Image 1 (cartoon, each protein chain N blue to C red):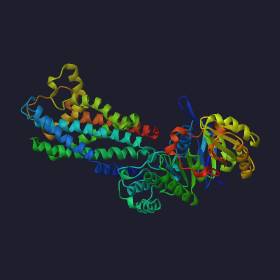
Image 2 (cartoon, chains in turn orange, brown; image 1 turned 30 degrees about the horizontal axis):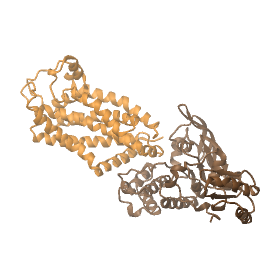
Image 3 (tube, rainbow over the protein chains, first blue to last red; image 1 turned 120 degrees about the vertical axis):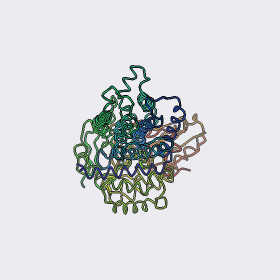
Image 4 (cartoon, each protein chain N blue to C red; image 1 turned 180 degrees about the vertical axis):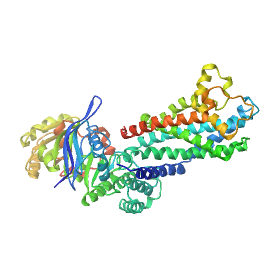
Length: 268
Length: 333
């Protein structure tokens, strides 16, 4: 059986392999950096004038934590399409025929994608600073905010790993995740305040972890000024705890499911 | 000699479809077994079970004395697998690919590096070692793939159709590389649909069709099942076949075969060139245009045809992908 040290070492080898690909395939870097910049600029300047945020807060302050949240979730879909691609090209077969740790391929994949998401966040934060977003909290709180985004996106990566192993075609993974993730990240407080939502949608959005991750990031970056009314649902009153609970739940379900699926997956 | 691979009563079903209906085979240590069969015969399924990628539904398989189901981890440490599609990471360079696989076989960093260097040299990839595998030709990818499966010096190597899709020149090169491996003492189980390939590389063969073993033995033993040499000729038009068959009939040592579509006649004979001369003499009295005539020793295509009643490969798709086969040239004029 494989020891923990062996699993870590195998995972590191796979992570390195995936990061080399990032270095050599410009598309990935473009996806990870340019599209977030584009999103920040579009929302800031196209919708920024039309959307009123309650309280005395600029739209840039409200928007950036939302964009962070949406972008890292979309960033995690790369996990699914990359695994489907490896499966299609026979690489998963090769890995499965090696005496390596059974979970290393998925750990290495998700960790590499976590790195890509960290890069996206850094680029977005810099762009945000240019268009008027500021961190008003302490360094510690800000770090917790960034970590929350990464932890949540990491859990989504494991969910996408199962999708990739099941769907097996990178294009289909992309299309399918787009159809699901687009509404989930929009029916949330990512871009607009929830006050304007119709009732059913609003209830969904209030308990949607995407809302709570964004809400928590806003709190941790100090982007909610004094005077903004306190939310009246538990999830939004305790967004950090609620979001971490979701991340833990997703990991607890999808790590074992994905590893199990990986062990039984042969190409074609 | 001990057996490196033992397969007994192997059964695998995919839903309704029975891919393997109880396959038995063994491969002696240090030898090459050619697993032959047309597309869909079950060759790849056998390799996938032996390399621990698939679980069998019934039966037993051992590699290096280890059970492929209950001791899968240990099996993986002693085998190398080269699948049907070159499984190389195209974004990594040749060297990075080999070092990665070496590390995953748990070689130390330094050993992985030195093995990668040796194998790049051996498979003539040194010049391309630092280029991403994306830039490699089909033949280079296959070589890299085989090099990767050899990095930890496996005792048993599975090669699943190692030359399918390669051009004739790359195929000949690949045969030389595989030949070298054999002389190093590696046990190889090779699947192929090219009979010439098995003839050239394998010590023993197992022929499977629709998941069942239909023949086994050495190339000579299989050929003996079909009989000895044959006299073959082609005429200008199908109508002439009847006259020619009548004239040569007495020479046949068995059933005479005629194919109107290719306007060919084939009959088992004995007596070698004397018989050929006799045939020519008889044909002088027949009004027929003989385009070519010759003696041919049976090849594995004949074996397949005799055993299954259908050819090993679809002839229509054949022309581009078949190895150039001068083997049947014999006495043809």
